[in-house]
Amino acid sequence: SFPDDKNEVAPPLDVTSSTSLAGSTKANTSAGRAESNGEEVEQYFDRKTGKKPLKTEGERIDFVVPSQEECIAEVESLHRQSNVDQAFDTFELQYQQQFSEWSFSMATSQSILLYGLGSKTTMLTSFGQHLSSEGDVVSLNGYDPKIDLNRFLEYMDLLFCDGSGPTQINPHSSMAKNNIAVRDSNKGLAKKAASIAKMFASKRSRPLFVLIHNIDGVGLRNRFAQDAIATLTTNSRKDGSPMIRIVASVDNVNSAMVLWSPQVVHKFDWAWKKVHTYRPYLEEVKGLPNTESSKKVKKNKGNQKPGAATAILKVLAYLAPRHTEVLQGLAALQLSNSSNSVSYNILRDDCMKKMLTSSDTQLRNIIKELSDHNMMGSEKDDEGIEQTFIPSTIPLQDILDWKLNQ
Image 1 (cartoon, rainbow, N blue to C red):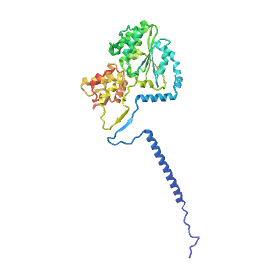
Image 2: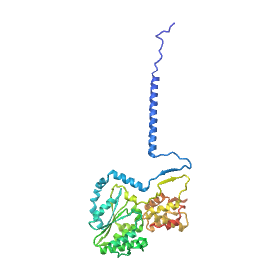
Image 3: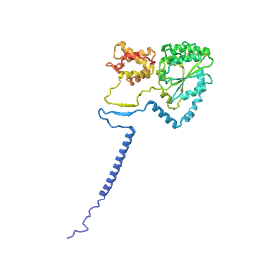
Image 4: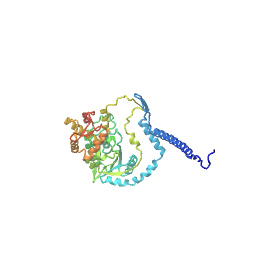
């Protein structure tokens, strides 16, 4: 017999299977797209970050490093193409409106110091043109590593004092050309500057403005040069006003802390002027030493590194003079005590006695910078006393024999 149609239950319609299938297909498509997008993103950032495949043991990689001159030329080309000089000139008008105020400050025994973001050579040059109506103007490029302040003083003597200062030379003589003219030592720079300044004040009626581009540059980064420059303005007073007036730019924000002693700061009597020009440092970079002599650089994993001591000692030429003097003081203490370390308190007292630092914070900042160059270290001993030391890989006597002006 046939089953009763009323009692027979039809099987339920399976709508979930088709829905699941469609959903699964859509999910797979989305996952595939996400995976594809993820690979593209990863490839994009791999190209941006310049990731390179791992090299095997002993594999040599050759790559071309552009020379310093090529880098500068490229930056100058981009700068010219951007046509932003006119915008810079317009932006700097706000500072040029202060030139008369700056000039008055210099007449009242203050020196002008420009600081801020960007090269200030154009600004100083413009200020020099403004000052030329009041007196004579000379310019000094502190960023030039070959600058010779001793020779600069001699030419000041020849130009403005008729060669009647402490040292008289003929710039065209064979002695001057061979650079064997008799000169004072670095310690005599301040005395020579004082003598020339007094002679200038007695003979001249118009002031002399000395424009110094980057007074913290490598060419002037020693305490003898800084003291001599400050002496020029303090020893040229006439009727209560200095006849030699200093206006300079600075780019190292720590200059006041590491470059000048309290006595030199008092001589300069700086009037700090914030000048943000945002100009590129084109001229300043040209004066930097070219550390790469070859265009093609080859790296081998098995190559030996150059002597660590020799490389570190070369860094001394680019440190602020106070950093070098603190390091030399520590070297002298280690040698005198025949020990591998000196307590921080002893080093601090020695630096304050020599007037190298005036506060604990100042000394610690210097120690931190020297530590960043791997030239100095500090740690606490078993008794919890902080010890400072120069690494054993650096010959202490070589540090003591290092001359600040070399």
